[in-house]
Length: 207
Ligand SMILES: C[S@@+](CC[C@H](N)C(=O)[O-])C[C@H]1O[C@@H](n2cnc3c(N)ncnc32)[C@H](O)[C@@H]1O
Image 1 (cartoon, protein in one colour):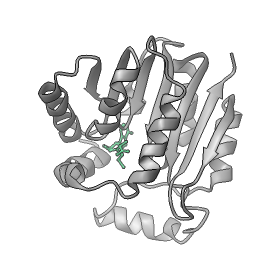
Image 2 (cartoon, protein in one colour):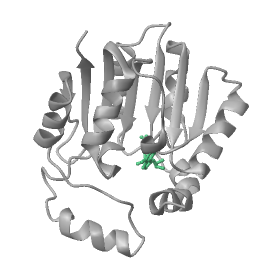
Image 3 (spheres, rainbow, N blue to C red):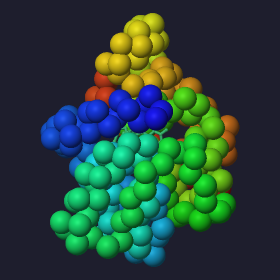
Image 4 (cartoon, rainbow, N blue to C red):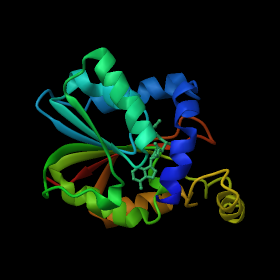
């Protein structure tokens, strides 16, 4: 099994019990995202974790396909949809790299706290661009550690070797925005709630 999947499987139960670090910012991100939703939309969430965000958005769209590399995260997420009898969210255990769908099949893609965990964010972003319909939106919330914690570039490989953190890539907000625009996205909305928090971006594929 992939080292990342092993890490996330190991911490899935603990992760599911953790309170949201900044509830007000989380609620605002949900609200801004919903401002882009329509009831007929097909949505993909990448790195959905235990499924809370997909479930929160489910009443506002037609269907959400939510994927995660960790089978334990997916088990917890599926338990929540069974319990809540939610029928328009499907969870699938797969890494983004192995996820294959026809081009232009989603109206919106969500990637929350995940782009900095991908080995190659440009690859992931290009894949999302292909999956989106023209005019589709890409909602991301990303730890841009290169802005304020450059030292993490040195610490991250050691932490990963010791098994205490997963793969983490260190880049700046500018580098992330460059990746998005180079892939063909236009940035519609950018918000960083606090200095050390993730950068929330809503980007759009040209219509
Ligand atoms: C920090 S958690 C974020 C979970 C959720 N999006 C949230 O905001 O709470 C990162 C999630 O991404 C998943 N993940 C890591 N690498 C992945 C990959 N290559 N493909 C799909 N999921 C991945 C992990 O299993 C984990 O559930």
